[in-house]
Amino acid sequence: MQFVAGRSREKLVAFQSFANTTMQLSALGQSDIILIAVSDDSIAQVAAEIPETNALIVHTSGSTSLEVLEPRERIGVFYPLQTFSKNKELNYKKIPFLIEVKIEEDLQLLSKLTHALQAEHFRMNSKERAAYHLAAVFSNNFTNHILTESETLCEQHRISFQLLKPLLEETIEKAFEKGPENSQTGPAKRNDSKTIEKQLAALQTTEQKDLYTTLTKAIQKHYER
Image (cartoon, rainbow, N blue to C red; front, side, top):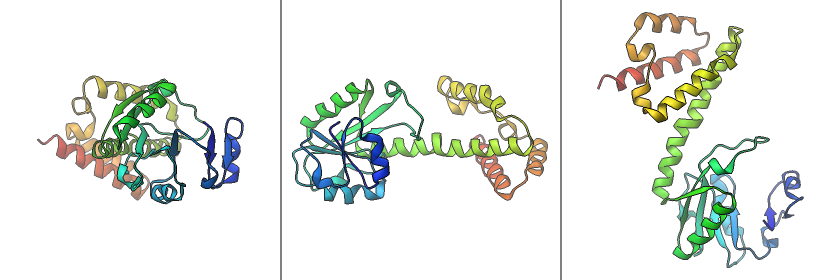
């Protein structure tokens, strides 16, 4: 990595130990790849501000198409299918990277980049990548919100959220061994109306009741088939 450009001087400090930093895209030096890692809404604007270059310009978004970087010719996508949080290190060997290029010869550059990270890469078009991103929203974002509600319930009843960890680990393991559809359990799957009514009555907020009801109905409808 030679240069890192950013809009926040404070955030750029973190990169100063191993790369030149700048707040001006025009100051970027000669590079093989320019990686745009910004919010989806900012990708087109940032790409337009990059001066004329022979570098391969790529973005890292799962839901944004390759075409957002046009009319540039050497463009691509380098999407890590993983969740990132500050101050949480990741094992890049376990992260699948979904890559796409406009010019076939540029595929080798992104392959080398994943190889340098000791990661696997999978070639996907924009439609396939967007489908993975959507599936990831269900698998990660929605699941994490449900865990937040679960933790809130534990706090309300002064019990340990950590005690649920073995259950969660077994749930994920079975989902990938047997398939999630074949692994569903619980009162909604069994149509256990007494338990459902009792648990709804125990919930303390409208948001919790709405979420519980929505998910219960979704499970019941799915297994009616």
